[in-house]
View 1 (spheres, protein in one colour):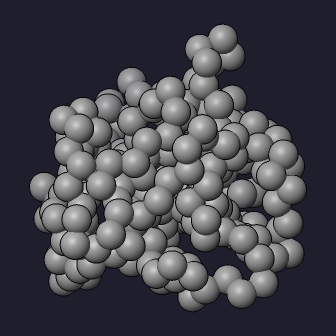
View 2 (view 1 turned 30 degrees about the horizontal axis):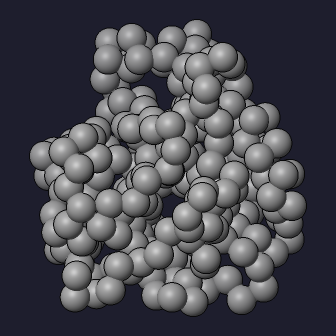
Length: 237
Ligand SMILES: [Mn+2]
């Protein structure tokens, strides 16, 4: 349920927002960042599948040794057999596949952690799909580990909540340098407290203004760049 990564001493670390079956577009964004698969790592906030045209490529991407996603609410609907909900949220492609193909995908998705922690030069960055349900990352990690995934309420918040961004909650999450989330599409990336929202709707239909943002986890700079780069708030603020 928690996957930890040591520092990448050879290259860069990026995070990307919800992909939703648009792996080709992510590949273009990586090219523009001169991503080096031999040295760099790409973390993802999950929601790899549904809505887009390339959902079946999820297995190809999960086999890349440099690609590390957490579980999103879309992977969760699939794994939890929430068939009606999943079907009406872009999951129809999955139920048209042969049994063996469905089994392969479910088996692989079941291995995705709920939380990722990455060591970076400035500290440690947490990754979760939608939101952090507590003011303390350590408390979340302990709850998730103790309850083998946490309570339904906890999962629901981690995977579905837009509470923090919708209410403009800029309080800091203790016990972690920064937290990266997706799930709620924004016109540009935003940082509230030490929580960075990076889903800029790269998966949206063309003409809707979406694009993929890559967040460099070492510098907190984004590609494409923002007018003002993100800085971590001081620990006591
Ligand atoms: Mn989502």
